[in-house]
Image (cartoon, rainbow, N blue to C red; front, side, top):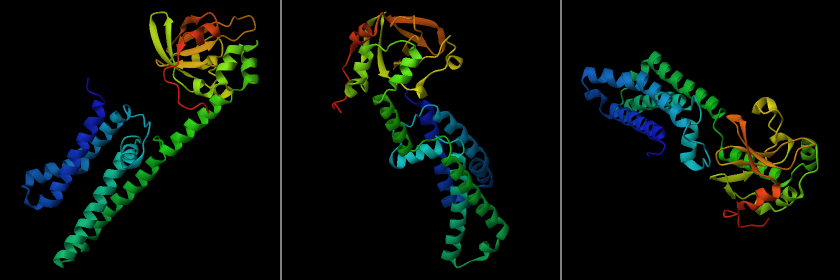
Length: 286
């Protein structure tokens, strides 16, 4: 199966747009009238619309796990923001036309074309509008690498410092000692162990911070109670203990899309942890 097909389509459309613009800038005067009309229609009307649409489609496939460097910046501007692609097209088109007219006038020592003030103002306005839209888009949905790293570090800090007072209040009963011990070992609680031997499936899981900010209210989960997931499976299912002073320490799993179907994973925290294999532990004990 082809991976990320919509992203490839977007880059193909972007390459076509750039190629047509370059050909028009270099050979536009030699084009027949019908071809000039088609090219102008593509560059100033159809092209930006198609670019915007394919960028929005590609955005669903790109999760910006590590948007570093120039490629990361391109993806963030053109794909990750709703207006970024349109802003770039306006900015580049307007600036390029003004630069081309200025260079041509200087090279030929013929400044008559620069007297076309209305035309120049149109392209200057297009450049200014593109810059405004681009700046607005950069404040939008795409996250910078530094922001992503900040969120990751905040999550690690929360993971390594459970709020046991809050979690005990949430459970309304003593916290299982086995659960406390696993959170005392950073290299284990930050790992992605595999859960085997329960039902017929195998899951990779990720432990979750046991803090108030990570509580899933009943109103959001459609469960009859709030939950604080102990872990999240690779299929995004919640793994948790039921709250309640009369509840046992069974480990449950629920699908966020079908929260009514609750599966018992283990009869105790000890049995749940015993079913984990730690194949992907981080190398550091810190």
